[in-house]
Length: 276
Image (cartoon, rainbow, N blue to C red):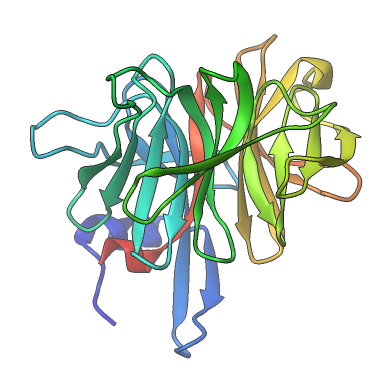
């Protein structure tokens, strides 16, 4: 097992490495980092889930020397050992493949049709499904509705699935739940099947310190670590971002930490393998 860079060694010593788990092919412990990105700058941070402290990781750079900013959703693919990041509307809604070891980015989908027009307003969240496909929540410009869009391995757009009656409007955090999805919303979340049908809707519950107004809260991002579903929730009243654990059966949120003031997105769990 190669050693991580000096930065990551220091981070581990400072307990910014959040979770240890056993690799299926090794008896050595594998470190799993929890990452988020600051909305405007594109800086990706390692998040200490107990304190909410942030340690700078990197801004990812294209070969044009442009940087990837406006990150809204991120996910990790074990197939390519890469991160994928989708931008918000203002940044263009493009998707990039991120190389954790080199801190570089490659364009994966430029969010344009054959006429050069945008196909969706932005990427809200992303996840890799059990079958290895990259799926993302977007707002389709033609349908003028939120959808789940599937992307092919070469970055081209696959089919999009509209949500059925009672589906989400906002937040649009996305996670796999078996073959179904969990999709975040304003003050609630939904379980949705592959055809877009809403199977279940649960209102959020839970107690936070300082208190937040769950009726003004948006469920922005999801990521699984083992069988625990972590989420980023944003209180529109106090402009604060929180990390919580969501019970997908009851809708109860358990506060993990409070992130500093501002907009943070892209919550995703990544093994240290991505940085070697």
